[in-house]
Amino acid sequence: MSAAQQPVISLKHVGVSYWLRQSLFSRRKFWALRDVSFDLYESDSLGVIGKNGVGKSTLLRLLAGVMSPDCGTLVNSGVSTSLLSMNLGFLPYLSGRENAILGGMFQGMAREEISAKMEDIIRFAELEEFIDEPVASYSSGMKARLGFAVAFQIQPDVLLIDEVIGVGDADFQRKSVEVMKERICSHDTTIVFVSHSAQLVRELCNRAVWIEDRIVQTEGDVETVLAAYENFLRTGRKCVESPPETG
Amino acid sequence: MIRLGFRHYKNLILHKAWADFRAEAERTYLGVVWWVLDPLINMAIYYLVFGVFLQMKTNDFIPFLLTGLVVWRFIEATVVRASNSILQNVTMVRQVAFRKIIFPLIAVGTCMMEYVFSLALLVVVLLICGYRPGVTWLAAPLVLLVELAFVLAMSLPLAVVVTFVPDVGKLISQLLRILFYLSGIFYTAKRLPPPMVPWLKLNPAIHIVEGMRDVLMYGVWPNWTALGVVGLLSVLVAGGGWLLIRRFDPLFAKRIAR
Image 1 (cartoon, one colour):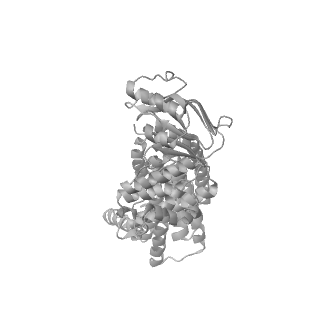
Image 2 (cartoon, chains in turn blue, cyan):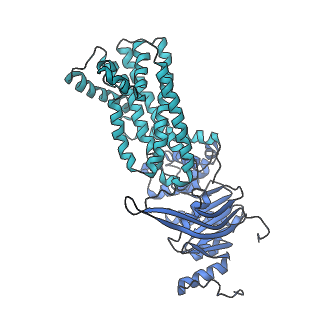
């Protein structure tokens, strides 16, 4: 659908390495991502699928600009990217309202912008009676709700979402997944969604990338990629090419 | 990546410093009173040890000691807090792409707010002891400015070093202890053997401490040359620290405890 467009972000053979300290004087290079290439187009919902520990979170940090690649190239055409982060370190002795303002500012929103959206945040987080109480008195569910409500206000060009979009109790979980789906399906934001659940990726994304062994195994439309991924989960074979093109 | 303007960074730093300040005040029952009590208790201890036991007491020992301690405590508190600031916020560093310089600057900001309280205490004690504001008090903000530059010069490079080599953080309090004893907090350079004095003057902190005493207690202008040199060198080193933080910016997120 977006083949003629310029990609907003383009990765070519990108790798990211960390140094692992083994003892005082010896350290070992560890590649969290080894060879990742794909293009992200405007209003894409790109699902990144793979088992735990294959470098999906590192990929999101890379796209968020928190890290830079150690090899390969990442070209950002000038779009803003943000990780949906629900927990940017609350100050327990300050009220929910003040923490909401701080959290929003750390994610790049102006103070007035957050104040303007405060009513929405409070209503969505269902914290009407507690918003001026110190966060120290909140339950973990309340904190998660506040974190999500604030994080959901940010509007970058590209929104990066890591796995856990269901937070809080069952009701709130349903509600947060709901608004998230709405946002993803509205296609006015470009989304990169990381998950190990084929089900969610199928539901939410139009394109997918499968990462295994820190290498992109296959990318393309959701069905092709998920077929390869599910086949791998069943058989343990990374036969990317084998499903015929007709499928 | 999100591109944030200078105004946003400025607001964020001020707002977060203020939030941290209040969070700290809320943490205890006495709250802000502690920023007055702390230096007072501190002074009482040194008064007892050096003034009474070791007989170093002079007529103006209380204001002399308090001026030194108040000035010193800002240096110590800020350097400790700021040098650990990036490491302490590593979860945030790993999630949002903003300039890491904000963390040490927030730490400095919070400490400055606390400093206001101990400076107010100092003024009150000076007035009680019979000192009256004179024209030299006008130079106090300049001395404080030099102190701020000195604190930044220590904090910014250390914030980088501590992030990558946390062990250095353990050494910082020891180094500050040495600097404390060499800063003439509870003695004047006049009481030392003359050959030692020039060596002591190599310590930038002593000029700041003496400068504050000169303008607030003795009613004389501070040693402008010494303060000028300290200020200039501090600005240069702090600028270097700033560049260092910029240079290492994309690497901070990788410094993970794996």
